[in-house]
Amino acid sequence: MDIESATAGRALVLIVDDTTARGNTDSIGPLVTDLLAEGGFLVDGVVAVRADEVSIRNALNTAVIGGVDLVVSVGGVGVGVRDITPEATGELLDREIPGIAEALRSSALAAGSLDGGLSRGLVGVSGSTLVVNLASSREAVRDGMATLTRLASHVIAELSGLEG
Image (cartoon, rainbow, N blue to C red):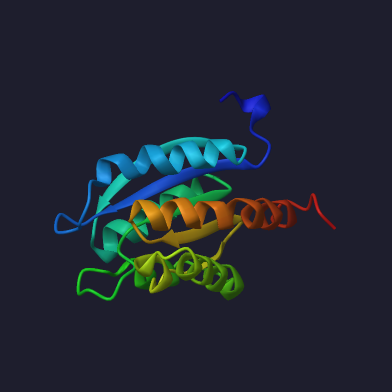
């Protein structure tokens, strides 16, 4: 996708890599990238970090400072001991947007994605960047991105002052 065709903004995908996680995390980054591109986003890249608060927080901070419009983190939002993405994200957010997080969970449950529906993931704004936590299953990512794309475009337009 070239820059002219990216109308929704710039995005970064952050994969929280828990070596004990089920499934193949190598396929999640390209999936999120493809779904973001379909939604009109120019994806700057996919970054994988260890499942620890400092690594997650540093990666999120770097993305915000780098000026992306949207950061989608995938993984670490469950109830397990290593699931600490919401805690790391919460420290970074200036304002939470609980309605989007609730919409993601509700949509996931309706689609039969239990891990997406039971996610503790947060959604909020840091500076002028929208930050979203998704569960790491393919089902949760597919459903989450379908719900998120339109909402993210609206929030980003508001943050950039393009919508009144």
